[in-house]
Image (cartoon, rainbow, N blue to C red; front, top):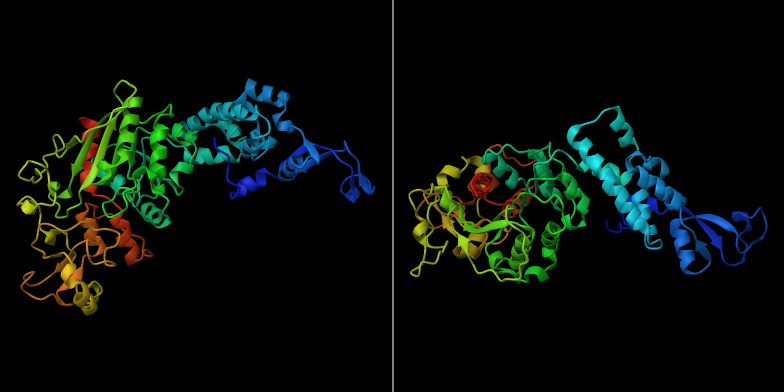
Length: 497
């Protein structure tokens, strides 16, 4: 358990708990505060002060702060004898958070907290998974604030994921896996609103994942973790700082967590940009997987291989915990798969030396479906809303990647689509021949968010809340993933790997 943040209202309330103190100096002018009207408060007077005040006065040697009665030796013996029967809420609604502060001053308190929490957590997890009766209702009513939050987070588990707008969840459904998603994590409130709009029955945690306690992951007991960590530390357009980038912190936390958990997931699926495979974070991840007993496979795949006319090359890692743990200091050579066994993917193009190159024009393959199959029927004002302005055409028309409805390939759509012209996704020339017939406001438009979602494999049932702006929709889709590719990988991971 980590020390809580003072910017938490529960933490502010926790340090209001009073602790016994003995005054170490004589003080004038404080008689009205507790000495029967006398103008002086004498040394060795006993006071019960809020912890936040007592802690400061103790540092300045004005008082000697004693152990709170709730952490006395007698109380600790009672807790150890029967942790589950303790009426913790009656003792303090902020027992654990207050104890974390007190633990800096009383060495034995952290161990008391850990023993109490782990014993009671088992009961919390049992109730969340199996329901309860009158006896369990009494236990629920005894929980302090920290335990009450944990009870809300714990449910019968199957899959837990970092999932943005729901791409991983839709992939799980597309793979026809009988599973219950028990938790989705994302720091972006707009992404979480979209996720909840589509999967309202799944609890969404809007916090940085590295701020969550390990006990949450222990209690979930999830069989499958799916992850799509921040890509900025690894993207080719960025600084490629890898693990030194602050945005890699949350994923490094997850990697470290795998070495500490008792209830490790059986399966892992991770998606990231092409470029991750060259990063130092990859080595940290793979060494940890070997160390804790996972067998893994790495893939570089593109939706074009499934017949989707959108080039979105991504790195994928699949891991299954069925190997013998061993120490691992080795460096891992590139050994990437470009085909998923049993999935029937279109073989990728390669250069003259046999090296795979997903950007080769050889992708104009009969098995790749034409763009027109993914288009909306726009007319009138709807069509005008997505047209490129004459100003944009004059200034940036030459740098756009332009496709027609008959084409079988579009460029990767990023979060900067419509905001930047180059390298953010294709635009659609609805009439004429690209390169021969001029691009005009009437025949050239952006792909709609729905069309981008179609190209990325999202089902027709996926929708945005009405209050999600067009810019937000493009940004969220640009940060999402190819649902169909992930579905193929989930099927292989759970059934054949």
